[in-house]
Image (cartoon, rainbow, N blue to C red; front, side):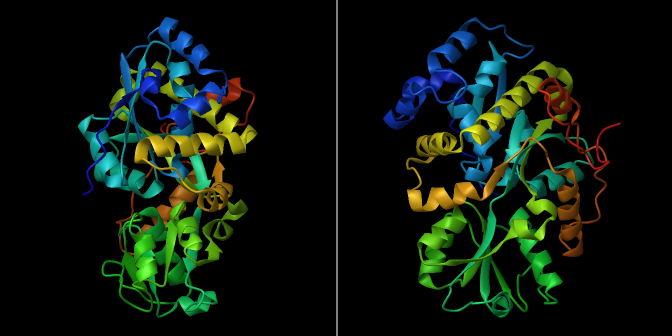
Length: 368
């Protein structure tokens, strides 16, 4: 199981250590106010019921809410005197492991690991408390080998990991085409090649794969290498929306520190509103956060198309998570789960109502 990155950072206190680009962005007043205002709020704000809240996320564009909210101090602003600590992860299973171990309290994560974590603990370890992102997943292919969707048959297509969100979606698409693939081995009418996103571009360049069903920015990285977008997964869903990232919380932390959870959710809602109101500035902020976390920013030919394909949302799109669970069952990767109670959207809907926004629906899977 991939090990999590263990670099913890403490809210606004980490600003002094940011790269020059990130400092320049902060100095421009990105977010709701300039950095000095956020520091003053943090320094003088009241501490909530916990000294610290530990939040995990991926250094991926599909986790833009976390990237931008942390980068711009919008979470810390809502937390006041309670310190925000963050850690990044490379895969969902390692983030779920950290949540179970009490190493993080709240996480931004995809639907498949959320479902797996909830069912394997018999509904005891987590709740989904909000949405973050929809879309941002594409089938991109070598245009010399694959010109139509039917040409995918017999080819080698990468997904990030056995049983991960994109893997399940691709297996379901293959099934709907009437083709047969053994889910565990990936062998059949299509060869499903499980490949870490970090090495997928190298695999494409070497010719060991003919395409990939992957999230952004990997899809746009492949296009920059000469691949062609053949299918945007969002077109397969009602209203072109499906959950790619949601927000989870340890049930223990939610019970003991509901005020802190609400503060993080307020920060998320505020961040999402700012991203949607200022998409270009938010894109630059997310890229600055990626540079800080990974050592390099994404070039324009990658981040520009990738950013446009991701929708930032407060709604966890619960009905689409239920559908993704059904796809995993049909692929033989998951026993039929009981997902009742996986959502607790009461704190989110309280915040949305106060902001004059419509509430989110839990598709009948909320706590009673």
